[in-house]
Structures are given as C-alpha cells and as structure tokens.
Length: 236
Length: 395
Image (cartoon, rainbow over all chains, first blue to last red; front, side, top):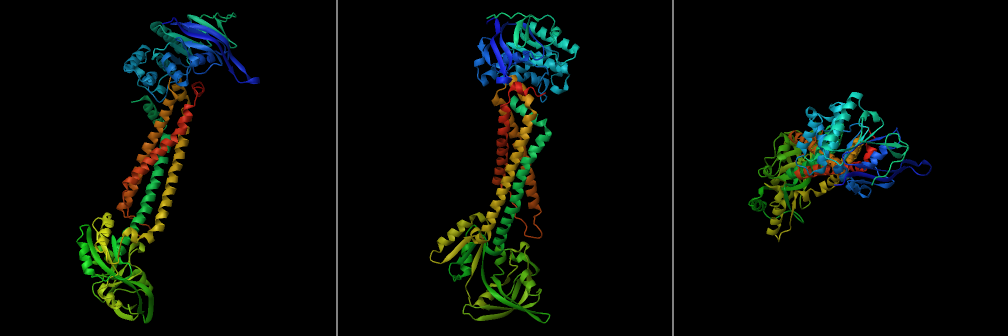
C-alpha cells in the first residue's frame, strides 16, 4: 500500500463564463500521506470548501487530477464516483447533516448499508458509537440529540466504512467553544487510534491546536504552512 | 430490511400530511369507481333482474313468425326435464281496449297491453305476482289484475271494480268480456306490468280465438349462466319448428343497449377521476422530493447512487399506491356492502342489484396502485438529478 493517500495535481476550478468567470481554484497541487491530520485554512471565500468538494468528488474540477489511493478520480463515471465516495471517503459537515428520519445508529450505519455487503455492520457500528460516546443515544432519532452529540455521530458515520480519507468541512463551525473543543479532541484521538487520514477545512485554525500539516488557501491558490506567501512544492 | 425501503417508509411516515393527502387522492379515485359501479352497474343489473323476473325469464321461447302452435304443456314439461331449468310457464299477449264506469262517467282506454298468464305455473318463473300490492293475483278466468298506471288512467280503478275488456280476435272480430278486478300491480321503478293488465291465459286465448296456442314460454333457470346452453339445446331439439329462443341479455338488448354505453361513459369518467388523483400524487411526491432535497444530497455524498434515490421515491409511490388502494377498496367495499344490505334505491325507484364484482374490484385496486407508482416516476427521476453539493446547500 502506497504511503501517499491523496495527490492533487494542477487543480483548477472556474465558475461562470466570459465576464462572469471566477477562478475559485488555480493550479493547486499537493499530496497527503496516510494517517496525516491536515488542516486547510483560509478566509471566507478563499476556495477552501471548493477544494474540499473536489477532493470529496462532490464537484468536478475544470482541469487537473485528483488521485485517491492511487486511483485517478477524474476519470470515474457517476456510479463509480458514488461507490468510490462510499468506500474511500468519509464526510463530516458543518451541520452534522444526519437524516432526521433515522435513529443515530441507522444514520451511522447508512454508509455500510449502502455497500450492502457487510454482515458485521451492526456490531462494528455499535462499537464505533461506543468509541465516540454515543452508546446511550444510538436508538434516539437524529433530531432528538444535541448539536455536539450529532457532530460526534457524524464523525462516527465518517469513520464507519474505514475510509482512506475523512473530509471535514468546518466541523466545529456550528458548535459552542466547549463542544467544539471536545469534537476536535475526538477527531484527533480517532485519527491517532485508527491511523486515519483527516483533512479538515476551517477558518479558525487555532481551534485545532497542533496539526500534522497546514495548507493555506488564499485567492484560490494553495500554500504550504500557515499564511506563508511562498508557493508549496509539489510532492509526487 | 433494505435501507432504501426503510428510509422510504420513514420519510413517508414523518410527512403524515403528505401521506394522508396522497392516500386520500388514490382512495377517492377508487371510491368514485366503486360508487359508479354500485349505482350504474347496480341499476343495469336491476333492470336485467326485473326484465327477467317480470317479462322474459332467463330464456324466452317464441315463434319466429307468429304464435307457438305446439302444445305448451308438452313444451313446458320438456323444458322442465332439463336439469338447469327450475320452471317454465306459457304466456300470451295482445292489446285491449278497456272501459269502466266511475261515478256515472264512462272512462275508456285504448291499446293497453294485456298478458295472459297461467296462474299456477307463472309464479314459479316470474315475480309479477309479488307486485300485486292490493288484492290478489289472477286466479280465475274472469279475474283481472290491473297495472297501477292503467288503474290511475281509468280514474282510480280498485279491487272489486268491474271492467269491460275488448279485444280483436285473429279473424278481426271484436270480442268483449267483463272482468272483475282482483288486484292492482305496482312495481318499484315501473319495470313490472304497471302499464298492462293481466288475465288468465285461457281467457285471453278464448277472446283471441287462439285456443291451444301460446305467445311465449318463459324459462327460469337454477343457474342463469347456463342460459345459452339451454337455449342451444332447445333449438337443436326442435330443428323443424320455427322457434326462437333468446337469453335475457338478447331479449333485453333493445332496452339495455343505450344504458350499456351510458355505463361505459360513466366508467370512463371514473377512470379520468382516477387519473386526476395520479396528478395529485405527482404534486405531493414533488413536494416530498423538494422537502427532502438536503437528505438526498447527504445520501448521495455518502455514496448512494442515482438508482438508490430513484428506488426510494418509487418505493414511496408503491407505499402510497398500496395504502391508497387498500383504503380506497375498503371504502368502496363498505359502500357496496351498505348498498347491498339496504337494497339501495333512489326516490322509490327500483332497488339496485348490487354485487361484488371481484375481478373489477381487483382491477381497480391494481390500476390505482400502478397509477401511483407511475405518478412517482417523474418526481423520483427529478430527485436523482440533484447534485450532492447543490442539494446540501438546503439547510
């Protein structure tokens, strides 16, 4: 298994055409090693969420390539992208985005159910819920738990398929400072425990303490480190 | 349980207003079809029933040219030997002029249909005798039962009155005879002999100078479905006679052909009603899809394929269809049961002949189910077109 889990090459994203053309991402290239806890920081509108959507295969780049676990994802069909997202990527959104119609357990189980191949899914999911401290909440409807609990459930859902990368878009953006702190600690401990790659987009870098690595997005361009004006080196 | 079915069920259950609306739309469509069937098919069957009971029997035997000259006793006995035949009886018909003096005033009516019946056999093949609400049925050669319309036209003839009846015999001679009114016949809906008079068959044969002849033989079957078999057997058995045998459907064709096309039109309107309920399902499903945009986005983000989303909303359509078909059929059967048990009639008209037409009921339920599923295809397809990144912007 290669040590590099993500490789982004010359990524560009352009919205609109002609006079209304906006370059959201410009020639972004970087790579991420397995098990890294990476922060992508930048001010509002800098393009960091656009970058995360590209890596998460939720949106297609205008040009450039994204390799995840050695697979060139820009060549995948719509169905292949769905399967790839399901098996290789975990998502944690700002607004936990649990399905209100399901219980916490069913929400966390959903990515496994979409795979429809797993016999131990329920036991694994219950263990994961225990690990994130939601054992007593698992049979409650998703809209009946607190914001912090919902975000912990979202972390569990992001991890349940043992993905190559967990992508988190402002995971603490909707939480009070104490709950945000707990959530960050949970993500860090799970990353360490499971040797799990996390890519976290945030505008509040200080909330996350010491990250393995930081990439700053400014005006659609990516820079290695925190607010460093030099262009990062491409590591292929 | 497959997560898509579970999710479809939960999404629908948590949108009770939409679920109830969609189910009602489907079930009302079915109810309209059932009500149409009970009323119009019930009316049709009631007319068939009454025409069979009062006028034609299940099979009616006549002569192609004129009166039947073969012995009616022989023919009746022959027919009654067929296992499917419950009873047979002969009748003869003509038209008469009747006059009566009421309060010193002579009232005369012309061209009144007259039916000569065998008072002993006729009650076994017909229920005309049950329509005699005042007095009693024909029992002797000088007794006459007057239809309620005729009685009214003759100035209110009552039981015990005496009528003078004039008929033109086969030789063109007028024959006059006086009869005693023994009964007044009235039938709900007027399908009986309300506009006729009824006399003893032999009395009318005498007046028409047609002794030994018969106008028609009515045959009642213990299984009306065997009418065509009995008819064919009879015609095959008397190939050299000019007999004509008709089933009730053939005898009543003239009276019912217009009605049948009316029923077809009403049914068509009912099915259009059902289609409009499909439009309601489309609208409600579109609302459901719209309210679940974010959920669809989340599911797509965590790996659900377009087909999975399509299946979820199609399954919702199937659930709406199944519940709607069940509820609508239950409503319809309740109405049918009520109409049957109460012998439903409208403003004293003939009571509807209500039946449970199971093939029709099943077909209607299946059609409603299929329409609800078809109506869900477009909203489901729209749901699959949602892009995850766009859909998740709905918070």
